[in-house]
Image 1 (cartoon, rainbow, N blue to C red):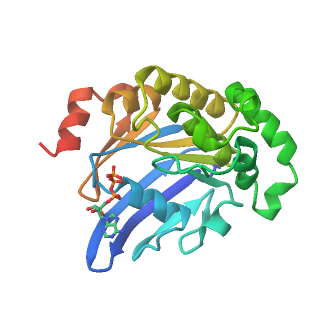
Image 2 (image 1 turned 90 degrees about the vertical axis):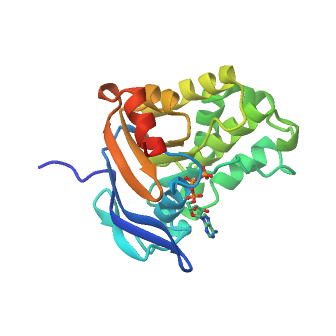
Length: 238
Ligand code: ATP
């Protein structure tokens, strides 16, 4: 029998009071995949991620994590089940050290046990964080802060790592470096969901892509079989 999908979102509607931000959104992600959700500003990408994490409640639809319904659960319940979010804009704790930021990522009680091992793994992946172990997060470069945000999310040993606009405000060479580490994280067994505005990068990095426009999924397919033009047309709704 086929395994349940890592993440299955079916017919999701989400409202901010009277404003409907998501309209019947369905996505399915298999274990081990890298999947990009692409869309312009306001397409509903962050709303989708926040709803999956349990930061927002859907008004209709279901969310399943490895076959278990998780819609309606809050982040303190979705994180121990294997979800972790790298939020847009990094949001590291600027007045804490690198070490303290990573400790915050292992806060849920179930996860705390493997903290030292988890930290060693993050320092292997991002040696620059090891060098900056006792440094305040506010003194790190943008790229290093992004690495710290990924490291903090990885401290909960997620099955699915969800990244919201990792490349925002970073130089291309830094973005390339961060994407290389993501591939490594994926090879080590973590399923990855990437939310991006950058069509080319998303197609290159992902196995499959979903394109969102005005709160709906308007195109989906294998990254290898979709052209940049086709995706851009869906992205702009032309
Ligand atoms: P961005 O790349 O700018 O983050 P996005 O694709 O992530 O865009 P969302 O942030 O999910 O888009 O926003 C989807 C829609 O919901 C937009 O029209 C936005 O204005 C609206 N929206 C987002 N957050 C709120 C909120 N807290 N209250 C009301 N409307 C909101």
